[in-house]
Length: 364
Ligand SMILES: [Zn+2]
Image 1: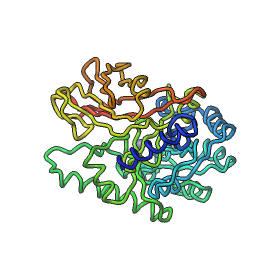
Image 2 (image 1 turned 120 degrees about the vertical axis):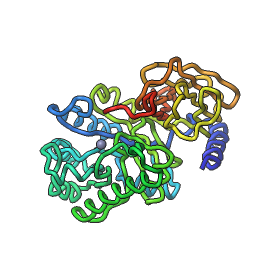
Image 3 (image 1 turned 45 degrees about the vertical axis):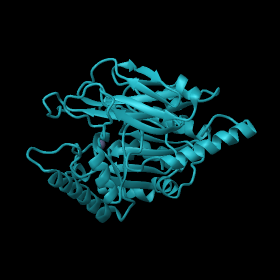
């Protein structure tokens, strides 16, 4: 896949020299957007006001975005078909009632397909903030894809006390299968797609998800193209401080950074095989290889809670360094650079997860 991207980038470079066209990979960006509640009366951090949601959808329509279904998104990547520029996939996590009450009428009017990732347990319990199976059946009739968000909505990367790797992965696998069975039974068979609860995955979970035949949606921001890893698809989340109309416009117009290779390094410069950091590691570095020297020069990454990172450049690569020790929790390197004069940005990110210094997980 890396070689293929390298080949494509090289071809585009040659082409752009010949026809003096615009910047690289401008034409094939897809952006996956993520919401939870569409309501004024639910937790602010995970909610977007219904009027603002309407403004987002109006923006997509008037700016000529193409909204596609999850099934089309996956098919295009699997078949290596370029996305049309300004492609958007709309997703909601958890299956909250406000999606039925406030988002559905707007989406139906626009005839936009969308996806809801559902964890079935609160639906079975009849919790009032969630949709019912009847609501979900209606959503499906009206063009929604309903997909997996696990049954128990746990942190999939966390092993329980005394659990072996095998037991842990069996437990996760059973939880995903249980949820899929409930969705299939209540709503009819659907595509095998999973949104990781809390956006958390690690290399073992990715491997499992691939083996089980799911595609995996994460929660680190960034645009994608047909080279996206289908076990860790970036999404831009909107809610709380994120999602005013200017912020939304910038994000849906982003392009994937044309990176040939990403590597997470430890503080000594050795390669880390997982973005969940080992005990004792507090200063991971991010190394990117890029074809375009101009982008290498101009690119910046920002780390959660620390602002702009330190930067060491060479001819074909760049290393980003933290300015302070990483805190426990989910963080990310957000890497952006202006892509053209019309105000579009390349934007990709790299997630990093750190447990507590004593090796335990933090409470959420
Ligand atoms: Zn969730």
